[in-house]
Image (tube, rainbow, N blue to C red; front, side, top):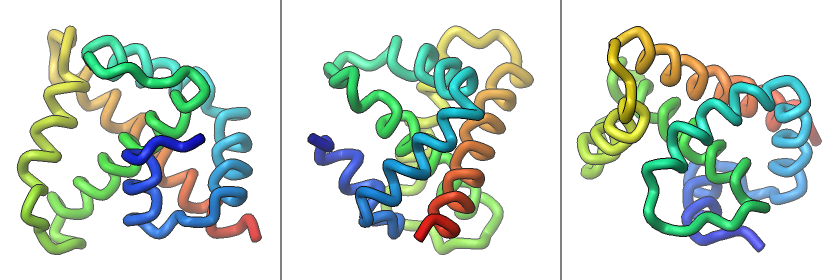
Length: 127
């Protein structure tokens, strides 16, 4: 069963078809499992709420989609929402934990952005 947070993020971003989400995510995991794991190790290690193991991939995908969404706000492609600044700070803080250079943080942001980009393409073409 999908948690409320992932359901909310995915639905808010236009991904309400559960079967298409699952197919796109499974295909993406075939090619990007290492990147998902790298993000998961970074993100989950600092979170105090329990995440069911069977939902780890959807949780990481929701973070990736949030990074993509935040980038659209940062670049002016999307209007600033009421919580954009807080959301961005939380994402940056979570990804920056344990990093010692800006390059390491940028690397993680790039991974998240490209996972979200690829997911969007796969989802759009999987009917």
